[in-house]
Image 1 (cartoon, helix red, strand yellow):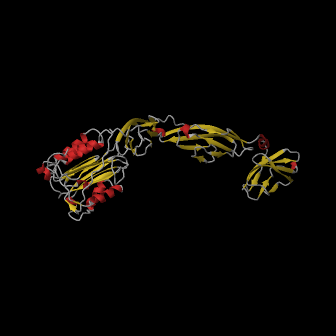
Image 2 (cartoon, one colour; image 1 turned 30 degrees about the vertical axis):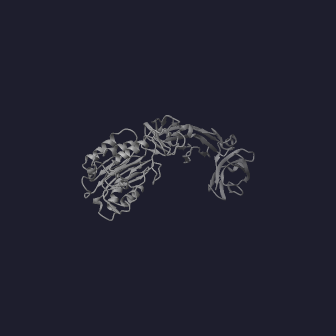
Length: 511
């Protein structure tokens, strides 16, 4: 329904410091729209002094022997604004009464709020020394309270009207106020055949300023002619609530269903009429947003009704749609690629680039095992690994997304060139090197080669199979080797006779 707004009627100035504020009222929040509502009346003027609202957060009523200004209301709202729950706020305000007369036993409070999870909470209190009839009622999202009433049926009627009324949240608040529209609801007004002398109704959108103006703010501050003030509020409310036809709520969403197993999100696009000032989204899972084009992620399965309430500061309108959230691990897969399948350790650095596309795999976590027993693992989506040993290695990738998991394997072959194998795979003496590794000098023990082979030669190769040094060993069978200009690294060598016949082989590491 499109609802026009009406400006607040001006309040009467008041210079009193204390007042016996005896009244009936309701403070409530709407979990569907994020709105906060306040309504009440009293058989004295200026009953709106009991009302305090925090848009998007909650509200509080402080009545029965109040201060002017209403210090208990002010400090209670401050605690509520700091994140106190209604019960914590109630405990604080009753334990720290700020008025200069009476004490907590003379007061009456109703407090409501939205909890951090998007649900609603309430608390109510009636002091033992508040004047009869007195009492309060609370529900999940409302608190109704009154004192100096003709009886408890006034509060019962307000509660029944609020719970059973259909329509918008402001309409339900107005219905609750009408539940007390009987002569003498505040018993002091029974002689004038009216319920009260002043009445008000207020509703704040989540995006309204803390101090107002609010979406709805109607106040009949006094009725000197003894005309029923709730009827006056109703007349002004009906004007405000007329179908103005200006604001028009509408929105679209890119998908109608989302897979929460892979954390898919829904992007909502506001397509409402021009000049919209505020957007109040309710995603059906107790989460809300006040952005014009929000993106939302559901964390449970179900069919959710999404509601958008818009206002152009004159009218309110509402649009709804549904989104289905389901759970399916099927899209999660561990597909990956590698830039090479076979590595020539002599002509390359041994590096392999692995790639896992999250847009394709729907993965949010990666666990790589490169299969070479190096102890090197990775949790990156696109790691690089260096192979230094020859062999056939099985690469394993495990991907995860929430509770979903998938596994994929591949093979990398790392090998030395044939020339190295020609030198090193022959059946010859393995020559011991001590110490190994070494930094500057080591000794090659050639005593396994008989002296009858005569003088010996040595050829030294790097890991790429390139010959980088030769040495004439002569008849020496304990040869002292000096690194000279060699870099740190891994080296192979072979020992031959003067005719080039392989007689021995070995390797060492310089560090």
